[in-house]
Length: 103
Image (cartoon, rainbow, N blue to C red; front, side):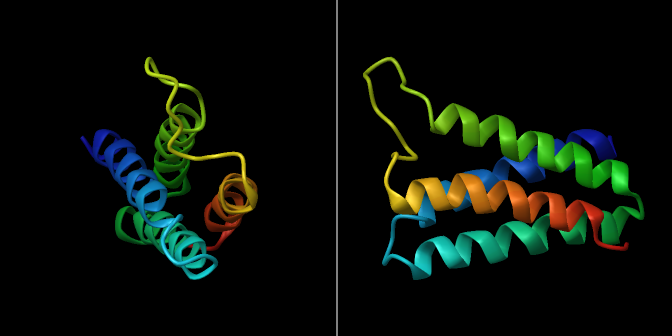
């Protein structure tokens, strides 16, 4: 049950990051990145294991990749501009930092 919760928390974190990253650049993407780090870090802190952080990161990456690809109506939620690229690149690096942080 904890794995499912971790997966949904990672996806919810990605959803919030996607929705907030375009608001008031660069503060929106900065807030999204900070929220991503603390959400993944708190997942390991609450459940006491790095494997839950990895599962949450998988949920984050899965939703982020889906948002960065074209949908049925050719829409993008994460555009290929400076803000979107920053969210994808730094978000992935911040995920790795949150996973490697001590619990």
